[in-house]
Image 1 (cartoon, each protein chain N blue to C red):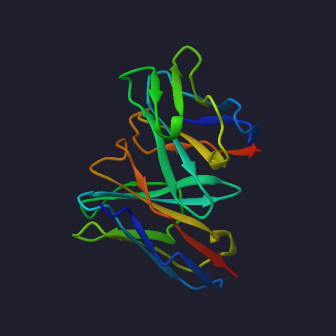
Image 2 (cartoon, rainbow over the protein chains, first blue to last red):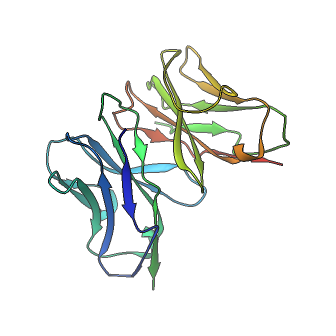
Length: 114
Length: 113
């Protein structure tokens, strides 16, 4: 069964600082990888998606993620945090073992200090 | 295009009751998936419907059921509610298959007392 590990249930950064949210997946083949963001009392919104076209994926709101097969990682970054980035972030994987049902990580809460 | 809509947004029920949640996908989307989100278990897949047929099912008891109508709208039903069913229930739609981009609704927050 595929699994996703998000290191750190909470990440705290200052406004303007680099954002780094970590995601590792368990898979021997390149899967589909996703990052979603969830604001309070809302559903999930897709930030970006990896589908093997390029290892560096650019998403919305200035976020990007790099697929590293050797490290089975798909970390999310943003050069400069904004107060509006404060939210819950979920990494998800699908397409491994013949299953296209996404498996989600437990989420990382991003806290942005002024 | 209008996004995924879910009704109702909030529900309070008591143990033993049943509940029906509704989801209207984005126009043209034929795949609808349901997820349960709780602080303890995170996001868990319930089931997926495509063209009125259940195509995939997660590891939930039979009290959880769903259906899809010919217009792709979907409902999920939970019978004999338990306290542990309190959660945010999210619906997501995609054009054809779950590996495509899924668009999520705002969710229905269910509280079981």
